[in-house]
Image 1: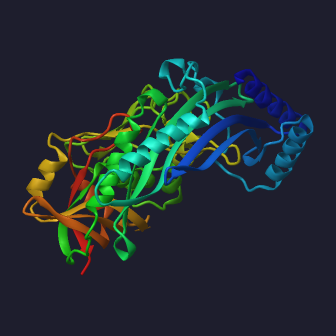
Image 2: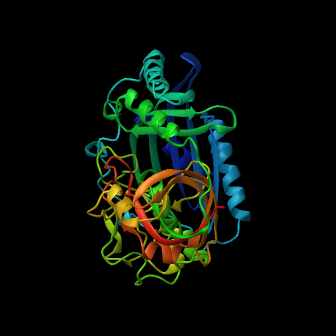
Image 3: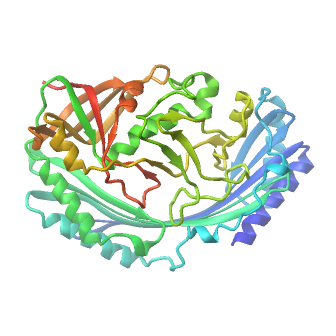
Length: 448
């Protein structure tokens, strides 16, 4: 299979040269997936999909265009190349467009040591159905759970090959298996919903389905009796299952695309404090068995661990070649690529420094405030960092969980919020983004 994808990529490059491209890169992706949903103890849906897609980017000077297709015939590839070249000739000049210099390309492209692909065979549909049924049964066994909205098990595998006229040609494979359960407690207008889900690159690393279902059921049952909290300024703890989103807002702000456009509240913050001095944010694209790991990026550059924020201070942006050139910097090998669009920067595996106390310790110390377990909607001003999100979770009184709450709006400014975070010690190691529960002081809560 890998050889087939390499051949497809090479054939696309040949077609681009014949069509008149100055340079080009090509990507071939083969996907296979299987998912099973059960409900009320019965199979609700089983779906399997597989296919191969190819993508071509051509460059005429500093003009570029991208095309993609799922038809793999030589005639289609020739037509793709001709269309892409015609589009590129009409495209505007892009001063950042261009392939990597051959001296910049990754030499080590053997992803085997990263162990990203499960050697186990594709699971049978009835095996996934059994896992989903076990999760559903465990959720239904929790007192207060009235129904399970869905219980799902899935598997997927992907092979990718990237090639370019600068001499780069390499690929890799990755797999993933997931279990999830959505439980509902109560009846009528008092129904509350929550979930639990886990994903791993290797199916053997997944937790027991009964644990997935039990946690989903307990979470849903715990939300019964939710009401609005009182309006005011209070400390807020972002539970570990959503806290990575808060760090995600920082990653968006330091993304080279936003910085190059001048549309980022962090655009002037290199060398400035963006987190508390005791905290660092690191990126490691070489963690074994982690979904975001890779030896080379979407432009063939070698990836490497780095520190994005060191002792609270921002050290640099997240860059691909184009944004790096526009900003007069070097790429950080963060290019991400799809078949239908040019490369763009994206972070891989990030880790925030953990604290020394548990989430329960933070709750005990906060006195009165909010534990957020779910977020919805978002209004983030990318230019100044103003932050507003809907939320639900649990009200804290005297350092203890008092009752569930919902229909809340949280408001603050990301600059201030991130500089004051206090981390717990509960980040999960198997996640691509390892971020513990986070205490944030002084957010404004709009409730009753």
